[in-house]
Length: 103
Length: 395
Image 1 (tube, rainbow over the protein chains, first blue to last red):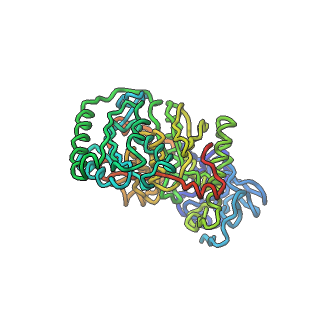
Image 2 (image 1 turned 45 degrees about the vertical axis):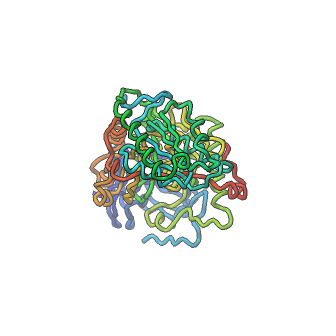
Image 3 (image 1 turned 120 degrees about the vertical axis):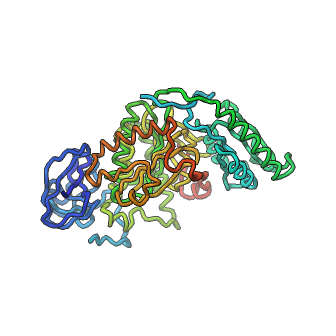
């Protein structure tokens, strides 16, 4: 079973507990271990990486741990991989010399 | 909820009875180590910042904090006899603690071999006296718990830190002060820390500590990446996410204090709640700072499976990566990898950690306790660098 944890009930993303493939259904769990639903993912997402639980417009805040971890830089659909290619920090840009290819 | 520990003369409660053999200057470090080798409950501590007093005020503050830690049940101060940083400087500060204390001077003793022999005799006597001490029950507000993460990976924010955060929430409800440090890890998490600050003064002090840390790392010549390829490959998309993943180990309770750690003073928690201690991310120094702040026990989370033990704070290691746990099972006290595998929830592991903290405090040995001497190192920021960076550690 593919699982992702939604750390806080306000979160707009969940973090994968195992690697999942495009087309997979991922079960979303709370910190208490309760399943709140499933999300079908449109692309492969690795363990530790995030999946969108809500659609986001460019500029929308990405919420994890109940706090803002950045903002969307492109429109994001439910089930999309959320990472450096479609969100950015509000605080510090990732240094240019750090490679960000994540596949 | 209660734990059982040893009542000290200064009113604090120890969870172990250690004899601290302090080489106040580095020339006598070998003497301290030889004594500690031969006396089971003795540990050797020293620093490498010279035998001057001027400029070493923070060294003194930290060493005093260590010697005063409730796990210290006897102190042997050793000097060469020619130093400006005399043992008496420490013993004067320690006089109010009521701890058994002896001073040895290598020159007065007539050399290294004699000092070692005398030191062993003194430490053994202290150890014998300590064997007669008995544990009594105490409420959890007498237990100061330090939390630290290291060897983090993609699982840390999800498993080990998440479950420790749940345990910390239990501790706070039970009245324990909980301390975390490593200002560099907080960069990116400021908004969340401000939100949790109990009042304006705490917020101002948090701002100060974090802006000091940023200024320090932005100095010309500093080579530091706040985010690296490993972080990004592992799924971290921003420094906020990285910092919040680390801060997740502190749970959700308000931050009631920011502990100054400077040439002026080394502060300790006074009431229940979360405390942010100023200091460093360097492993042994951070662990030592937490002990100097009075923590009796340390909970350490890891993803890659780093096996850290503190010299004077028994350490509970929580590993959140199932692969790392399988590899390092002999060293890890808590397997939080069950969260990744779907066998336990974050809350269930959190409750397990909370129970383990009480058991270890009450006498249960951790996997590495007694197997290796734990880490110890004194943190002393260079005042010249601080001046260049425009930093004052006085909050």
